Image (cartoon, rainbow, N blue to C red; front, side, top):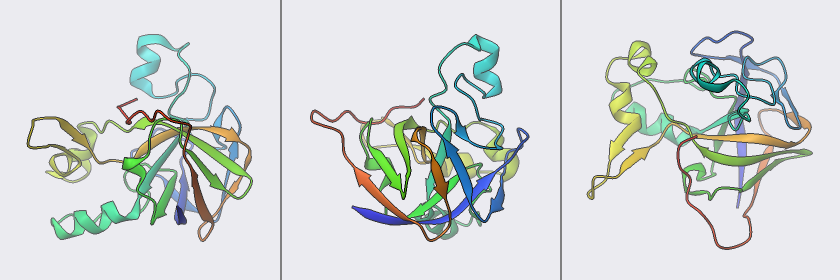
Length: 179
């Protein structure tokens, strides 16, 4: 499988949306240089409040651009970076990846740890958007569509237009859950 990077984003503060960049630097074991979530231990405020010593499994947030296409059809205009992702991709089925899948962006490698669990802030950004990003299937299982989270496994730069190569982990594969 191969896809491409549509856009990259960072924010030094804990704002909801992130600003577009020409390139971002991923640092092994730490995340996106210059981003508020950069660090080996948790940086998300709610998780820091519970236990600041937990490992940071949410160093990099990735969203598939196809989500924005679907949201537009549902009446929500959302641009890359506005949901707080660091990397926006196209032609990679991020939500179908198993835990431990590796995404290669040239030298940089991100290992997928789980699904983003969107919060109420999304409705403050656009009323009704949360219902589009968290749904249930016919059996009543919760479906999270707001992208995936990962850790940086190899340092390198990522820029729009870069190729995304997917490397699956050895079997058995485990489905993504929220992290």
